[in-house]
Every structure is written in C-alpha cells, then in structure tokens.
Length: 345
Ligand SMILES: [Zn+2]
Image (cartoon, rainbow, N blue to C red; front, side, top):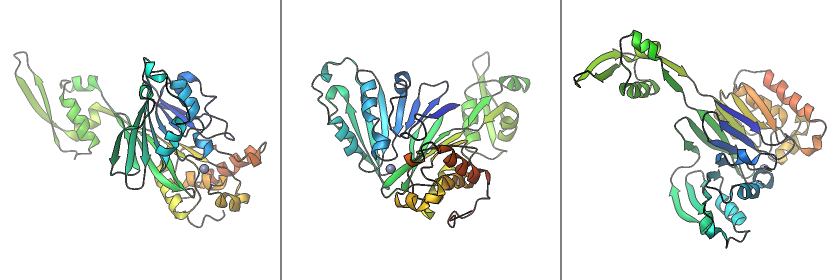
C-alpha cells in the first residue's frame, strides 16, 4: 500500500514522491525543485533515484541538503554515469568547517549506475562530506534496492545521454488465516515461515509441507500436508502493486521495448509528455516523447492508470491538449505489438 504523487505541477520540474503506508520509508524519483514538498515529508525520504542530471531533474539537491543537514538521516541516491561527480560538485560548492561539531550525522550513500557495473561512495556530514568507502560491484541496472516488502528496478533509456527509468514494485504479501488453521487442527509456529517461502518459490502443489510443534512434554511432533491444500485454504495472497517512472526518452524501437517491459502491468505509470504529436520532430530532436507516444506506451504496457508530467512551457494554458492526446492514445488500448511503426494512429 502506497501513496505516490508529483511533487510539482506537470509543467514544472519533474519529481515523484512515493510513501509506503505503515512504514517510515519514502522514495523520491528525480530531484527537481522541491520547494513545495513539506519538510516533514522530505525528512522521511530514504531513497532517491535520479534519472539524469539535467538541471530540472537535479536542482532540488541543495534544498534536500538544507532540510536534512543536522539530522540523523541517511539517504541512498542512485543516478547514471557521472552522478558521483555531479553530487561531489554540489557538495564541494559549500564550506563545511563547522559541521564536525554537529551532534547528528547526516549521511549520503551515492551509487553511480553503469551498463555493466556500479560504483558507490559514502559522504558523512561530520566528515565534511569527503568521499569514503568506495565500492565497485559488477552489476549494472536491474535491481537497485530490495527491501522486505518491495523492490526498485531500473533500465537505461536513450536521451542522447544515458537516462534511467525506474519501477517500484511491492512484493506479494501472504497472510495466514489462523482461524482456518485452527479448523484444520493445525498449530501456528515456525513452520509457517517455510510454508510462505515454498509458496513464493512456486514449489509444486503436492510438495509435502512439514508442520511441527512441541507437545506439553516438550517433545517435537510433526505431520505433513500438501503445499497446494495449505495455500488454497489457509493463506491469503495479495499481489503487490507496481509504480513506474519514465522520463526524458526519445521514441525509438529499443527505448520503447525497454519502457514497455519495465512498465508492464503497472498500477500507475508516471510518464513524461512534453510535446504534442504535431511537434514530433521537435520531440525527437530533443530526445523526448510526445503525449501520443506516452499514451501509446501506457496502452502497450497495459498499465491501469497514467499520470503525465514534464509539459513543455510552449503549451502553457493549453495543457489539456497534452492530457487529451495522451489519454486518447491510452484509451485506444491497442493489443500489444511491435512498437516500431507508431508513426501515426
Ligand atoms: Zn533531460
């Protein structure tokens, strides 16, 4: 369960704030102007995913720093090639001689993602943000963060420079129906952890599940029941939802295939729609999508809901044209097929 929203109007700087209900973790996708995001929400941010460091996607870094400085907050940031230098450029723009006296230690862990590897450095306020603990891993995009309840993945898109697109996905939740177990004459206990693993692994239905408990004399007792029976009767499965964030990408065969794969089946797709399709040549020259391409992408990926942003200022006062064009392409819901040849519809 989550809430996700644009941090600015669709014509202003990009950024999506996503907060998990029942948990403290919040996520930010892109770091555009953050002035309108209340500080109490900024202080909940645990992870920030930056698509690329064109100014409108990264200018919020200073505001983030200002709000979080002097607090015990630890934020992990991810960005494309060059990201470490961009972050160090920002941190290097200020004088930090007084921070050693702070009682709290604001810290950043920054990962620069490449096609085939990633490089991480840490920066601590009380050390004056001097880079520390560099680590290189032989993994590129793909899974960036995996928590108990969610996973965040990324792919590279072509925006004349590498630009990351992100997908946040909740994991399937399994809840044991204790009343049903009782009716079945089965105890609760440690065996349920293994049962959940077996269900998530999609082990065969007939797999015997070992159910064990201690009797009053402290002796271990056991019985077995088929996985399929236990799953169907005593476990409620709730599939997790998926939210996708795609911005700054030219419409090409490779980009379209990657975007569709990333967004497939998402509950909510945040996607840029800077230009009307009549300005397709401008969009292509600037390596952006048109509203029609954004809507078509959402239809091909079979997403449930669409939220558009990154409108070009040239459509000021005419934003409804962008919304209408994208929604009309989205609602046409053409069956999935090769995205190339989307010249017109
Ligand atoms: Zn850009």
